[in-house]
Amino acid sequence: MDLNHETGGSVEGWDSVLQSLQTILSTRVNTRVFRREFGSDVPLLIDAPMNDQSIVTLYVAVAEAIERWEPRFELSDVKLHGAADGVFTMTLIGSYRPKAHLGDVSTVSDQKQTVRMQQNRVDNWSIAA
Image 1 (cartoon, rainbow, N blue to C red):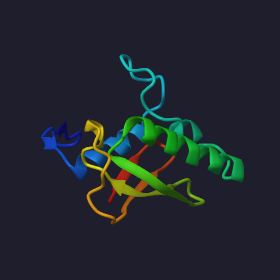
Image 2: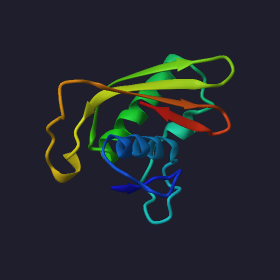
Image 3: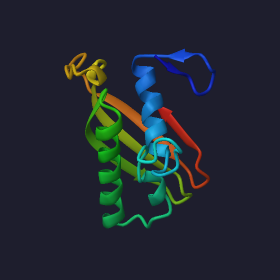
Image 4: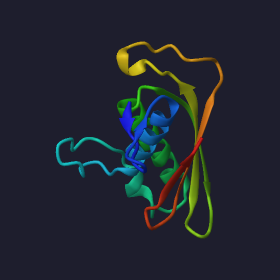
């Protein structure tokens, strides 16, 4: 169970994983005072050109951060869709493993989970399952 960042109430299960993914991918490494290594390099790539090298770097940053910080989501695919207005949508596809943080890496089912994250140049992140 976690604290819901929007309401202050509790959040658990898949909703907790969604909130965690958003926090991980939107937090710059070295910005948390007591956990400097937490976060990802994704925010550093926001203004990078949309070329092949930057896209591969983004995929690696996403995969490494999720693998390190969110064991309840087993990432299997990342897709990126950019737009001329500076908004990009990242689609993460993977399996939900509700007890992976306890060492049980079995999945709930064989059904893949899809998460869509959207970010614009002013650091407004949104997430939808």
